[in-house]
Structure formats: C-alpha cells, structure tokens
Amino acid sequence: MRRPELDRTFALWFSSHRYSRRLHKTVRRLVPDSDVRFLLSESGSGKGAAFVTAVAYRLSEQHRLIDATLAEFKLTHEQLLQVKKRMRIEIEAGLRKKSHDHAKVKMLPTFVRSTPDGTENGDFLALDLGGTNFRVLLVKIRSGKRRMVEMHNKIYAIPIEVMQGTGEELFDHIVSCISDFLDYMGIKGARLPLGFTFSFPCKQTSLDAGILLNWTKGFKATDCEGEDVVNLLREGIKRREEFDLDIVAVVNDTVGTMMTCAYEDPNCEIGLIVGTGSNACYMEEMRNIEMVEGDQGRMCVNMEWGAFGDNGCLDDIRTIYDKAVDDFSLNSGKQRYEKMISGMYLGEIVRNILIDFTKRGFLFRGQISEALKTRSIFETKFLSQIER
Ligand code: BGC
Image 1 (spheres, rainbow, N blue to C red):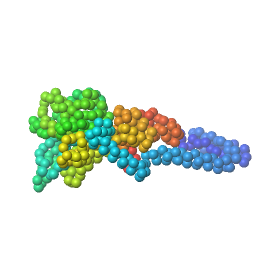
Image 2 (spheres, rainbow, N blue to C red):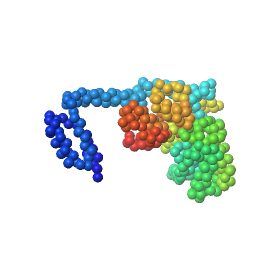
Image 3 (cartoon, protein in one colour):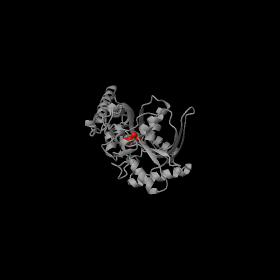
Image 4 (cartoon, helix red, strand yellow):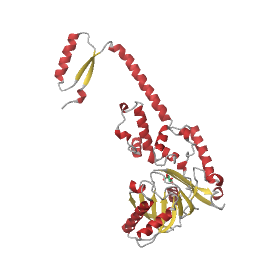
C-alpha cells in the first residue's frame, strides 16, 4: 500500500552536486513506492526569512478581514440601546389606532385577559402547529390542594409538501393526526374542549377566532391567509365526519408559553420564543391597546416582533449574510428580525459566511464544494453542537 504521507517534495541545499545525486538515489531506494521530488533551493535560507514574513503578513491580513466581518455580528452596547429605542417606537406604532395598519410590529390583541390562578380544572385537548413538528396533547388539569397537570402527547411530522400544498390538504392532515391521537388515547367519543396553538400572526376578534395574516417559517399552504384558522380546522373536522370537538381558543405559542409558566409562578407575564421563529407576548394595560374597546383590566398582546425591521429600521445592523438569507427565503423582505436570530435561519447565515470566506480564499483553498452550495444543508443544530 502506498503511504501518502511519504509523497513529499524535499527542499534541498547542497554544497556539492556529487552529494546531491547520491542522496537522491538512496532516498528512492529507501522509499521506492513514494513519489519523491527534489527542488533545489537558491540562496534559500536567506530568502526564506522574507517568505516567513510574507506568509505571516498574508495570514494576519486574512485574520483582520475575518475578524472585521464577524465583528458585524457583535453589537456594541450603544447599538443595543439603539435597537431597544427603535423597538419601542415600533411597539407604540403597533398599539396606536392611527398607526396600527401600517405598523410592522403588529401588537395583536389575544383576548387572553388573565393568567391561570390554580382553580382551573378539567380535561382538555391541545394542538400545537408552527414549530418543527405538529403535536396533539391531552392535558388533565386538577385544581385544589392536590393541584396537578398530567400530559399525554404524540408528535406528528408535517411533510414539506403538506406545509406548502393547499390549505385543505394541510387541515385534512391535521385532522387525521387528531383522529389518530383520539384512537390512541381511546377518547374519540368524548368531545373535549380544545385549544389550538397556532404559531403564526393572527388577527383575533375573540378568543376562538383568528384570521391568519401571513404565513412565516417555511409554511405556505394556499387559501389560508385571510381566513379564520379556527374555521379551517372546524371545516376539516366536518369533512372527516368522524368526531366532533369544541374549539374554545386559538393561541400563539408565546401566549401558551406564558400561560404555562404563569401557572407555576403568577408573576410571569411575558412569553418569549426563540425557536424555529422568534416572537414575544406580554400582559398590557387595556387602555394602551387602542385596537380593542374598553380601558379596564389587561390583555395579553402578541407582539409579532419577528417582523421588526421590515420597514428598514434595522438595515444598518443587517449584514450582507442576513440580506442573502432573506432574499432567498419564501417570504423575502418579511420577518427580518426573526431571520437574524432564529433557528430556521442561523444555519443558513453560517453557510453564507462560509461561502463568502471561501470565495475570498480564507477557507477550503478557495474551492466551494457542491455540498456547501446546497441551501439549508448546514443545519442550525450543527451550530449549536459546535458551540457546545
Ligand atoms: C410567528 C409567531 C411565532 C414565532 C415563534 C413567528 O414566525 O410569526 O407567531 O410566535 O414564529 O414560533
């Protein structure tokens, strides 16, 4: 077997030619399988110092360029304060009636008016659509002295062709998963109340109605935007003619998250998701939510902060990589903040950096492989694994 580590080119300096030939012969005899070449060095030892310096120079210039590029991802304290200031402006615009329609951070009323107080009781079904998987849950909540929450759940994949097919196909798929779950739990005839976690921007007019404003995160099923997703679900259940459910609430995942934690700690009044997408909700004073009648009490607001920056207000901190990822996404120009920070996009940002660094000769000897050219091939989980 060839020993590739012996394929070497030797740099030689000789004071005599006779000696050179002899060495040549000896080495070839010692390693006959190896590809050995000799290069004669002309005043090598002196020139070499210049080369060492030149290489060091080239590498330090490369490091400087790499550092300068990556530095754009680290915001200074001043920049962070700027982002905070801009976020506040967008929040105000979303809450005010006069600016709401044009606001990018939508500040959507959720009609959730209070967090749990421990007296909740009963068996409930829940659906969770909008992350990497679709989940169906049975949650048994018991109040009183022996407060407890018992959960059973099953995870179902949503194939990409269903995510991006027709609305009817998507909801038929959801209903067939529910049907499977009801069989699995043996509760098909029970007609339990159901809460639908639907993690996309919805304009709500009550707890059990939510018009999908636009898909995000890789979903693009047709005929759903502008529709009430509770209706779409009810119609799906009707089409199947197999079971009935009482759909009581449609909630954003931020709201669901806040409510779960508020059950443990009543001080919890903010829900924050940095998952496939990113978003937050919080309990707001009714008098500040101009889109809903009434000044009394409080309501949870689904901020939909993923769309922060969609009016260009973050353009100075978006890198060329953020822009490239946005340009090639399903919803280009939308959810710009989300695309800068959340799980669905971080891997793509890294892949774009790798491509650029390769083009600039910093990586992989300047050769961009077919694999590296493949969109979404570098998953965010790899990034987490490297970080860990
Ligand atoms: C959606 C939000 C959701 C967030 C986190 C975003 O893309 O618009 O409604 O809360 O992702 O899942």
